Image 1: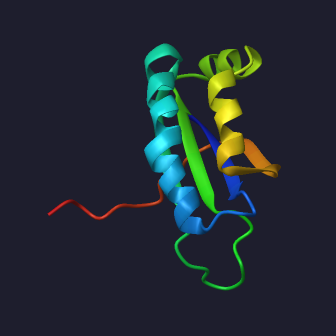
Image 2 (image 1 turned 90 degrees about the horizontal axis):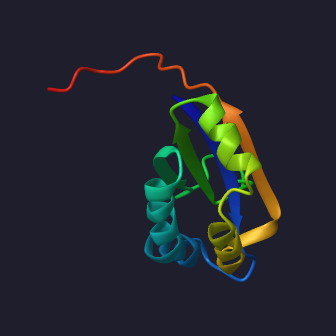
Length: 113
Protein backbone atom coordinates (compact mmCIF):
# COMPACT_ATOMS: atom_id res chain seq x y z
CA UNK A 1 0.00 0.00 0.00
CA UNK A 2 1.11 3.51 -0.83
CA UNK A 3 0.07 6.29 1.53
CA UNK A 4 -0.22 10.04 1.01
CA UNK A 5 -0.32 12.08 4.21
CA UNK A 6 -1.83 15.54 4.33
CA UNK A 7 -1.30 17.96 7.22
CA UNK A 8 -4.16 20.44 7.37
CA UNK A 9 -4.71 23.61 9.39
CA UNK A 10 -8.23 24.84 10.13
CA UNK A 11 -9.53 28.16 8.86
CA UNK A 12 -8.51 30.92 11.29
CA UNK A 13 -12.16 31.72 12.11
CA UNK A 14 -12.95 28.14 13.22
CA UNK A 15 -12.40 26.33 16.49
CA UNK A 16 -10.84 22.88 16.47
CA UNK A 17 -14.27 21.42 17.23
CA UNK A 18 -15.92 23.25 14.32
CA UNK A 19 -13.11 22.06 12.03
CA UNK A 20 -13.54 18.46 13.18
CA UNK A 21 -17.35 18.60 12.94
CA UNK A 22 -17.26 19.96 9.39
CA UNK A 23 -14.72 17.40 8.25
CA UNK A 24 -16.59 14.45 9.79
CA UNK A 25 -20.13 15.55 8.91
CA UNK A 26 -19.71 17.30 5.55
CA UNK A 27 -16.34 16.79 3.86
CA UNK A 28 -16.33 13.08 4.69
CA UNK A 29 -19.31 12.61 2.35
CA UNK A 30 -17.08 13.69 -0.54
CA UNK A 31 -14.28 11.45 0.69
CA UNK A 32 -16.63 8.45 0.77
CA UNK A 33 -17.75 9.25 -2.77
CA UNK A 34 -14.09 9.43 -3.81
CA UNK A 35 -13.60 5.88 -2.53
CA UNK A 36 -16.27 4.73 -4.99
CA UNK A 37 -14.96 6.46 -8.13
CA UNK A 38 -11.20 6.77 -7.64
CA UNK A 39 -8.38 4.30 -6.98
CA UNK A 40 -8.28 5.33 -3.32
CA UNK A 41 -8.37 2.24 -1.10
CA UNK A 42 -8.72 3.77 2.35
CA UNK A 43 -9.01 7.20 3.98
CA UNK A 44 -8.19 7.82 7.64
CA UNK A 45 -8.44 11.21 9.35
CA UNK A 46 -6.75 12.22 12.60
CA UNK A 47 -7.40 15.31 14.70
CA UNK A 48 -5.19 17.18 17.16
CA UNK A 49 -6.89 16.87 20.55
CA UNK A 50 -4.24 18.39 22.77
CA UNK A 51 -0.74 19.78 22.40
CA UNK A 52 1.92 17.79 24.18
CA UNK A 53 4.64 20.43 23.99
CA UNK A 54 3.92 23.54 21.92
CA UNK A 55 1.04 24.64 19.73
CA UNK A 56 0.60 22.06 16.98
CA UNK A 57 1.36 23.49 13.52
CA UNK A 58 -1.69 21.70 12.09
CA UNK A 59 -5.15 20.62 13.25
CA UNK A 60 -5.81 17.51 11.23
CA UNK A 61 -4.06 14.83 9.27
CA UNK A 62 -5.45 12.72 6.46
CA UNK A 63 -4.00 9.40 5.33
CA UNK A 64 -4.97 8.41 1.79
CA UNK A 65 -4.09 4.83 0.81
CA UNK A 66 -3.57 3.51 -2.73
CA UNK A 67 -2.86 0.00 -4.03
CA UNK A 68 0.07 1.26 -6.11
CA UNK A 69 2.18 4.31 -6.81
CA UNK A 70 0.72 4.30 -10.33
CA UNK A 71 -2.82 4.64 -8.91
CA UNK A 72 -1.70 7.52 -6.72
CA UNK A 73 0.09 9.31 -9.56
CA UNK A 74 -2.87 8.86 -11.88
CA UNK A 75 -5.31 10.41 -9.43
CA UNK A 76 -3.06 13.31 -8.45
CA UNK A 77 -2.04 14.11 -12.05
CA UNK A 78 -5.64 14.04 -13.28
CA UNK A 79 -6.57 17.03 -11.16
CA UNK A 80 -7.52 14.96 -8.13
CA UNK A 81 -11.16 15.68 -7.28
CA UNK A 82 -12.23 19.25 -7.95
CA UNK A 83 -15.37 19.03 -5.80
CA UNK A 84 -13.40 17.85 -2.79
CA UNK A 85 -10.72 20.51 -3.29
CA UNK A 86 -13.36 23.25 -3.60
CA UNK A 87 -14.99 22.10 -0.35
CA UNK A 88 -11.69 22.42 1.52
CA UNK A 89 -12.20 26.21 1.47
CA UNK A 90 -15.10 25.66 3.87
CA UNK A 91 -12.87 24.43 6.69
CA UNK A 92 -9.17 24.48 5.73
CA UNK A 93 -6.64 27.31 5.84
CA UNK A 94 -5.69 27.75 2.15
CA UNK A 95 -2.22 28.98 3.17
CA UNK A 96 -1.29 25.77 4.99
CA UNK A 97 -1.45 22.46 3.17
CA UNK A 98 1.33 19.92 3.23
CA UNK A 99 0.98 16.62 1.35
CA UNK A 100 3.68 13.99 1.02
CA UNK A 101 4.17 10.37 0.03
CA UNK A 102 5.00 8.18 3.02
CA UNK A 103 6.21 4.68 3.66
CA UNK A 104 4.48 3.09 6.62
CA UNK A 105 6.68 0.73 8.62
CA UNK A 106 5.12 -1.00 11.60
CA UNK A 107 7.62 -1.40 14.43
CA UNK A 108 5.48 -3.60 16.62
CA UNK A 109 2.00 -4.42 17.82
CA UNK A 110 0.56 -6.10 20.86
CA UNK A 111 -1.52 -9.17 20.14
CA UNK A 112 -5.27 -8.69 20.25
CA UNK A 113 -6.55 -10.40 23.42
